[in-house]
Image (cartoon, rainbow, N blue to C red; front, side, top):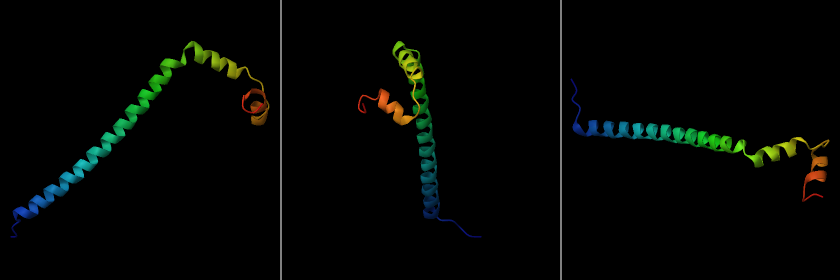
Length: 80
């Protein structure tokens, strides 16, 4: 029967704790990313019904153009 010394056990525990810490950090970063995405969507949703957004969408949907060049020629303040 082989005996395991204290140093070997401590090295295994240290390595395992590092792996557990890395996995925990990865899950935290993923959760934080999902939370930020949800917060952004909720902020956009609260502003989507405002008067300014509704007017801008109406103006955009009522424009008439054939292609991108026609659009920039008619409506872009920088192009013409």
